[in-house]
Length: 362
Image 1: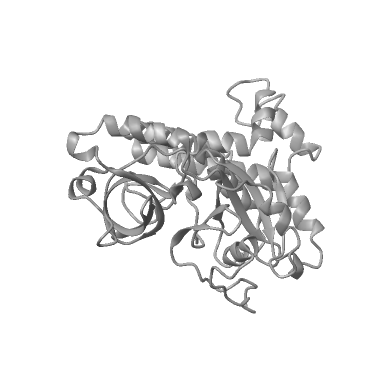
Image 2: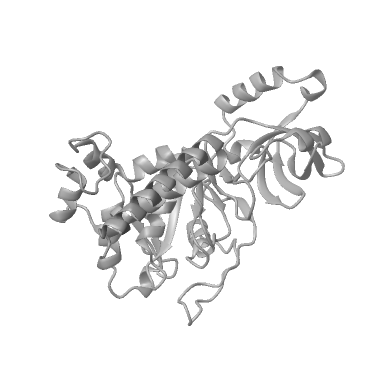
């Protein structure tokens, strides 16, 4: 049964190697994949069927940030088929992981949203909720995850003029497929379905109400997920998905549906940002000075590109915003960087006061 969920010879070898490294009591365990993650419990698919699982006491105590199982994970579990239950003892190393900054006060921590996806479908609706800047943010995190991203523009049937949004998306993605689809008319669904193979996992990521559950149903050709009507006040679909669930479609493909995210905070995404904004990275490499801040320095390739329209002000502002967000996270986690940043701002404040005294800012 787990073969249908992506179990392979490579995973079998990896599982065996990892099992050999465990203490003897943890070696006689079975592989399983997490299909549903809820508070305190997991639904897993095993060689003996589906079971409800909990963490072992030792694993629950020793797992560090991001180490607990999430939907899509491969785990080692002690099975009790007579009870329909199991105990998870460890997680197999992840091939990919979509991680965001967890919401809330205190020390920033990463939250793994989905694991072991082959593709990341970044879902955005073509109606009034369309936002190209949001797509850039999702694309940054998707590239960092290790999965191959694709942009999926839903609700094509509700968009009278799709060329405008499509042009905006084309301007912010590079080497990334773009699918325009409608779950109502079926437009683009077959092409999207054929973009991944049976046994592969595609995770659906996007804000609330963009039509992810409807997209799952369209890909499956069956009503697997509950869906909501479009709200008239903001043109969004009603939020229906409340947990992360890995679904095996009738055609053998796997879709990992996730609840809509109110916000997506970046987490350790330097490499993803560089890939998502490869155009800006390439321009910066052409500047005369390697430490160019792209402000007043001569021979700045970035400012030159903006002057002739090769780079939009909106994309440049988005890149700077995401850069600041990552720098803030680094400072929060590094006392030395915090001290260095304080020195920079003290110096700038002194320069400002000196300029005021000279009348530079009048």
